[in-house]
Every structure is written in C-alpha cells, then in structure tokens.
Length: 206
Image (cartoon, rainbow, N blue to C red; front, top):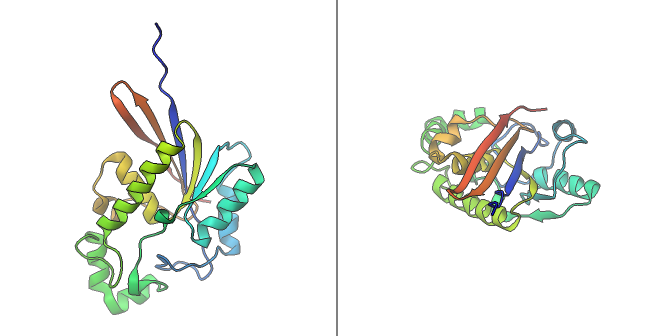
C-alpha cells in the first residue's frame, strides 16, 4: 500500500505598502495606502501568482489591496482582527525621530525587549505574539492544503516568522527587516514525523 503523499499548505506573506503620511509608528492608526504604496504592492504581485484565498488585517493599508486582489481574481477574502499591527499606544502616528526626541531611552528598550518594555499605553510583545500565533494556527488549519495570500503588517509578519522558525519574538522583532511590500513564503507539511514548517523565502520590496 502506497502511503499518502503529505499535503502542503503555502502562505505568501505580504506587508502593506507605504501609507499616506510616510513612515511612522502607526500601530492601530488606520491610514490608507498612498499612491506610492499602491504601486509598491502592485509591483509585488504578478499575473502568474495563484492563490485560493486572501486573509487580511482589517486596517485600510492592508485591507484595501487585499480586497482588490480578491475581487480581481474571484477568490474568498477573510478579514482577521487578530492580524492587526501591535498597538504602539502614545507613540502612534509619530515619526521615529519624534519618539527619539521625547522618549529615546524607552524606544531603545522596546526594541531590545518589547515584553519587558512595551510602548507607553501600548501592547506587550508577548500578548501581541499570542494573538497573532493563535490566528495563524486557526487559519492555517481552516485553509489547510491551499495556497493563501496574507496581507499584513511588519510586526505581524515578524511574529509569524518567529512561530515558523521557533525563535523568541523579542529577537525577531528587532532582528528581521520587513520593508514595505516585502514578500515572504511559508510552506507547511503534515508528515509521519509531525507538522513541518519552513520559511522558504523572505525579503525583497517593490
């Protein structure tokens, strides 16, 4: 009897492009994509890309493009609130230089250990990781065997990569560069040895 061939699930992770207002600590602040951001995301996908479904953060800088792709290709769109970016609390809407000027030591501490040093009024890194990891587990189970596009934020993608590579979230948060319109790919396989996950590709931007 021939053993069943393990069925793979593929997930392409795509960070949103540049929002209106340029580079800032947005977190839950809901700014739309700029014209440049739309161009970046259009350049990041191609006619040869094939997906069975799209999952997105509910925030506009992700959702608008995810909706456009789903509509164009006639595939389901799933909006997942747990894939929102980390909350930056009182830093939201500020540029890095503005935070450095008023809260530089605390910003450095956050990037060193976001669990012990969350943004003022913001979210602890451990809580952020837990909500993203929970949503990741639910959706990969629900859409098992499909090729999925997940449109999300830099922090969300870092937490997913931390899950895939089994690396501490504090290390990934500061140690992995995720530029605008960055694409990554994850493969998951069920085998007789358990669930195998692999970061197949990471990097690149429009």
